[in-house]
Length: 414
Image 1: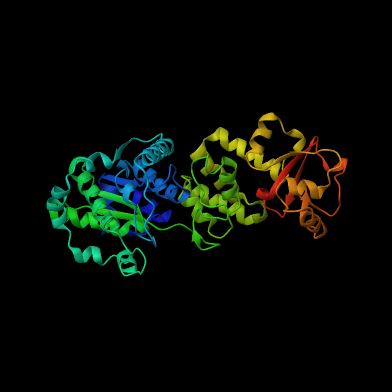
Image 2: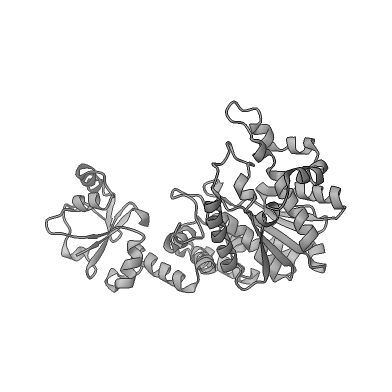
C-alpha cells in the first residue's frame, strides 16, 4: 500500500496543503513534527501523531523531531481560555528530557534527527528577529486567528503579547528547519493547523520556497465525545510513572465497540488484511472483546515493551477473575499493590471495616449500606453479609470490589 493510500485507510488526514497526496509516493521529503515540553511525558493524543510520523519514516521519508524548549516557555494559547502558568527553565529542562526519551523509545527502530528550538532562539536578538522575520508577517493574519478574537477582548487578563507571538515563533521554526535541514513538510495535529500555515506563509514571503502541511484529525472517544485519552482518572500518559502499565492496558481494553476498528488503524501498524480478520472475529463474538484485547496488547507493547505488557495482562487477569488468585507470587503482589490497596485481614474485622480501610467506603455506616444494596463484590460475586468466610478466599487472597471497575477494588490477604 502506498503512503497516500495508507494515510487515507488509517484516517490520518484532516487537512493538507498538498493538491495531490500522490506527490508523497513519488518523491521522498524531509518533514518535521514538534511537541512542546508542557509535561515530562506525552499522552495517547500525541501518540496518534507519533504513529503518523512512523508511517512517513516507514515509507522512506526523513524525519526531524522537535522538542520545543523555546516555545514551551510561552505555551501555545490556541484553544486555551487563559495563559498557562510560567514554567521555570529547570523544570522545562526536565520536561524536555522526558519528551526526548519517549521519542527515542517509540521510534527506536527508525532513523530521525532530534532538535530543540531553544538552540537557535537563544542566539537571536530581539531587534534582529523583528527586522528579519516580523516584517514578513502581516498583522491582519495574526489578528484573524480564532484564539486571538476569543481572548483579546475578555474582561480578565485577555491575551498577552508573548502568547500573541507564539504562532510567529513556531512559524520561524519551520523557516529555520527549511533553511538548515531542507524540511519541506510539517506534520501536526488539527489544533496546530493555524500555526503551521503561518510557517508556510513566512517561508513563501521570505525565501519563495514551496512547503506543505499535513494535519491529522483530533482523536475523540466516540462514546463520550471527549478528547481521546481523557477519562475519569485524567489523561492517559505514555510515562508509566504517570499512568501505570496496567492502567494503560486497561484503558484500551475498556473502550466501547464503537469505532474500535478506527483505533486499530490509527494506533497499530497491523496491515489491512489482519485488521479485517480481527474485526470479522470480533463481530462474530462481540462479548469476547477480541478487538480490544489485540489493540491493548499492540499499543501497550509499542509504548512499554513486551515484558511489561505481559505483566500488565497477568495483573489484569487477577483483577478481573480470569486467573485464580491462588497463583499470585511475590512479583505479582508487588505489581498489584501499585494498582489497588493490599489489605492484610486481621481477626474480628468485618467486611464493612475493610471497606473503610481500603478507601471503598467513607464510614462503617456507608460500608454496611453498600453491602445491603449488594454494591459490593467478592471475586466478582455480589455479596450481602457481615463477615468473610473461608470459602471466599482463593489460596490466601480475595478481591473486594465496589461496583465493576477494578480501580474501586482492594486485594485482601489472610
